[in-house]
Length: 288
Image (cartoon, rainbow, N blue to C red; front, side, top):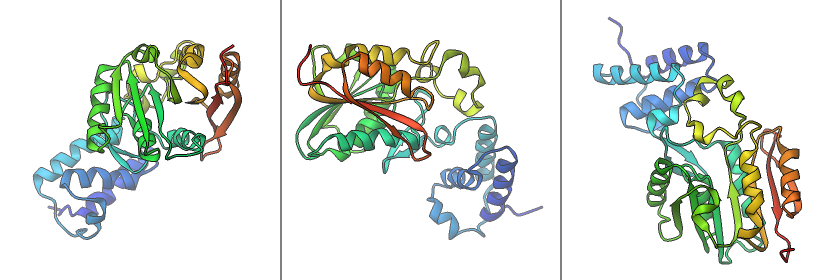
């Protein structure tokens, strides 16, 4: 009977994941095994010849099976890192993407004095990733994060506590602007659902495991940009900035909505893969 050491298990899983078309096969195999063994990925390297116990093998096999069925690794280990912070994640929220860090970079750059007090609003917050990253980058900011999903709100609140931002980040339940009636902000961010309804069934199995409420942007994928832009100026102080993530093919449509809303200096920013990813604009000095 073969002895399944850490190295042997990782090699077998990497091969199986590669055959299944998983691009980061070795990394994912390591993340799942480290989770089962209760250690770090680095510690795997110092114990490559360690035989796995039967219970450990059984637990690992179950995770492999679920991963091959399309379940995201972040859901399997209930955690994902964003902007250097560990976040709880589960099937109630999207897994934060590296592309979304572009939103944080643009929003951070919009604050000329990052240490000056300001009010920040993050719509469609999900796990709270953007809200927490901005709280980290803007040490004098107070942040309100909202989501229509009660499950997402509960998860985001856990992440606020976990990362030590309870004094400056408040998570509220509500549909877009409903949770902030009558309030204004210096900076507003959003990564709303932006996939056209008819496209969702064609997405990779892994993406389809994520909550539809966080993916479905309506018939044309632009429903949330209509709603966000329609009332953005009500909630932005003069000179305040709106920053949104969108699909690579939606930049011109989003720009049109920003301009129709009266926002100025509308600018498109590309992500690390050179895809059009983020649009931002500024509220004029007076409401006209």
